[in-house]
Length: 468
Figure 1: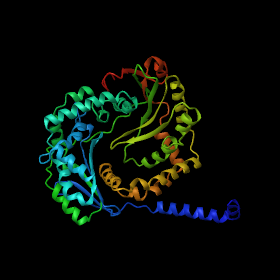
Figure 2 (figure 1 turned 120 degrees about the vertical axis):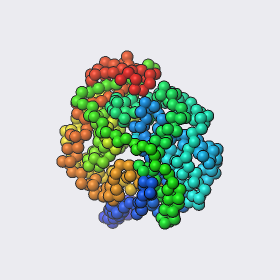
Figure 3 (figure 1 turned 30 degrees about the vertical axis):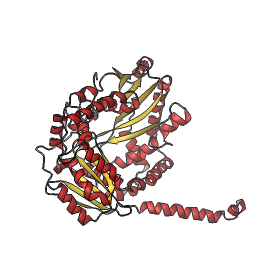
Figure 4 (figure 1 turned 60 degrees about the vertical axis):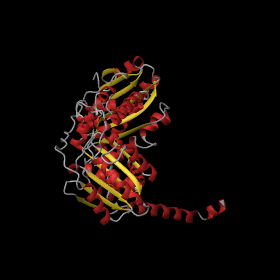
């Protein structure tokens, strides 16, 4: 066998190059499947995408009912989404669960900062039975007092348990520190105190105010005929009544400024420090979005990234570190996340600042090409299933981009030059101004925290957002 490969090395190389080029050609040819977009008379935007490979249908509804609209009732958007499945005018909670479970269909709903998503996936043969139920979940939930109270109690218990693992809640502390009194700083899940104060009537009012068709969209992807599905969706959602008020526009968050800040959250029994280091990011529709994703792939977006290589591979300070941009509709943040033993908190923070200095020192063409190839290689598999495609369509609606983002993705990634990457590094990767959250034993890391900015100290036992 060895002799064969030695004698035919050129042939083998040609075959491998051919296969590689074929794969790259397939990736380059990836285009978003065709779809139809239209609007019902009540203002609901509808996307329909036929995809007949598998006999399933996925639906995704997006409504402007996120935590930004919670006001003083932190958690009301999340509770509303959770309770959509608890019963409607024509279907009890038990009937809903039995119908979807018996059909092997999925059903979930959740609230994010800006919106609520309601999703289902079902066999195509079950659409006649399940779609009317799905429609009622979105439009006509009843939020029965007794069932709501059970869900609320479960939520309060879950919020208390979440704090047992700092990784579950550090993002909430970060958002509150970074966005402060901006609506993006609202705690999506709510706190134990705020959730206890919410009742079923609050949820009913929230649903009536923010679940409305004129600023919402539904995307259907899967095994159906567009002409037939268009009639079905029009029949089911055409009578969805417009709400009495529109969701208020969210202003762009203010820049946190040039001063570094540290939020130290004391967990008295902690043996390690969980941390986020970050700064201002960018909105989803920012023209630099693609370039920041390319550069972040190199910096902290993959296993072989600079930050993971320094903190895990070379120094053994942590089991893993990563970074990400978290873009929202009108702003965003950049975050580096990891955890380390109490005694290695100082060198971990030092390493993070060193890698940040490295990204500002210049980007090589070789490193940039590696990051671009990685992104291009992972891109097509992210839009294969009906679930992924229906979710993509609602994202397109919310963030205001079109199919060109998909169809021109490889072209736009390859258009990121070294010069552009270095400009993006200067604009979006923090230098000296850092926003930091540390969850750990305060007595052991307090002096370390002071080296990185003005420190605010709170207890993990207190409500998130209180005291700062």
